[in-house]
Amino acid sequence: MLAPASPEAPPSSKPACPGLLSPEQFAELCQANPEAVLELAADGSLICMTPTGSDTGARNADLAFQIQAWARATGSWKAFDSSTGFRLPDDSVLSPDASLVALDRWQALTAEQRRTFAPLCPDLVVELASTSGASPSDEGPRALTALRQKMATYQSNGARLGWLLIPAERAVEIWEPLAESPAQPRRLLAASRLDGDPQFPGLAIDLEEIWAG
Image 1 (cartoon, helix red, strand yellow):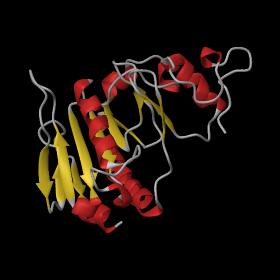
Image 2 (cartoon, rainbow, N blue to C red):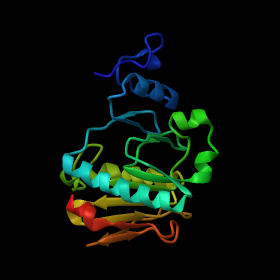
Image 3 (cartoon, rainbow, N blue to C red):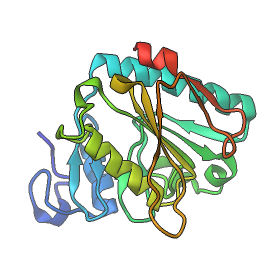
Image 4 (cartoon, one colour):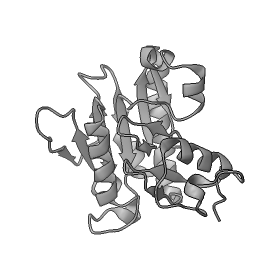
């Protein structure tokens, strides 16, 4: 059970999982409950996540490894795993399954900002759909409908590129920056390779390893 953020002043003086939280209250709640998997919506509502299945976890590990290897090779990017929360400009706090931030943006943050939820939207965000939540009609924070809402949030908060990987369909939805009106994602079917050009020159993801699980 979630504990209040602090005995002296719990968020909004309510018990665990209060209705609405500020980003600062959310950070306190996470510190008091390090075992919990939580995100925060822009309206202040708490999103209680669930652990991934083992096959999804294996796929995500391979995804993070490939992105980290590229980031280290270029020396210009900072890679982050699925446990990293970012405070987006709309005050939501979300954790992509994998992400990249330009090194100069990361280095511009203070030490305190780096220790908490970095106040920025990553340049690249990647979400990986679970095989049990492949249908848009599925419910829960890891279902396709919820993941598409997250991708739209990243997009509206300034992400340069977003990838939604759907292993059950061997498909990828590519979410590009917003223009003057909301853009619909491009969809790749039977994809075996994913290229980050032109936003991320040289970044290439071997999807066959990820589809294999």
